[in-house]
Amino acid sequence: MDSIGCVSCKLQLGRWKALMKELGEAEGNPVKFLFFFSPEKRRDFLGTLKSEDFVYPVCLDEEDRLNKLNHFSSEMAFQTFLLDSDNRVLAVGNPIHNPKVKELYLRIIQGEQISQGKESKQIMTEVVADKSSVSLASFDWHKEQKATFTLKNTGGSPLVIQDVTTSCGCTTVSYSKEPIQPGKEITLEVVYKAEHPEHFSKTVTVHCNTASSPIRLSLSGDAK
Image (cartoon, rainbow, N blue to C red; front, side, top):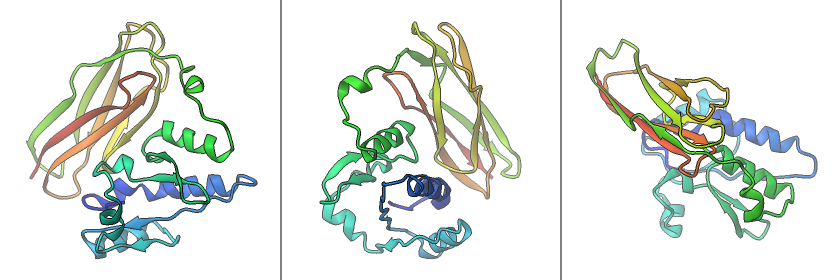
């Protein structure tokens, strides 16, 4: 796990703790978690561990040896793996950033046989976004900024938003949790609150029951 950028926002340590607790309480499923971090700024990273009260063991791989040995993808979504007792890879993907991956991991851990047929039973639809990016241009970094994205259900089945994640804790999203009927729209309101002056580019990832999922939307600007 590469902690370059907004450390706490990318790593989502609170959600990892919740997952570890969830699996720890599952009878007969002693799952071990191994965390490897290659932080650009050691002090900031250690500060994040402390502020998040993350008391679990981690490996601080300052020379990025694990990555150099295995040639991992630069995409963070593919830097997490579920291994069996012989260290064979059973599944790839980040269960914190993608609810479908979490569901897959849990099913494998619980001993279910995973097949393409079972996955295809999900009722799918189609969606169109009014835009994929919004530029907020320049603004006073002390002032909260808002932007909206509209998703339209262009398919024949209800659209279900399964989860919405952001690449940074300074970006939040509010939306209706109700299914969107065919022909109807849903508005995502994105709020950005700068912690300091910076040029930024944040990502909002929408997981839903469409073939194009996850849908990635972006928000950028100059907080001065």
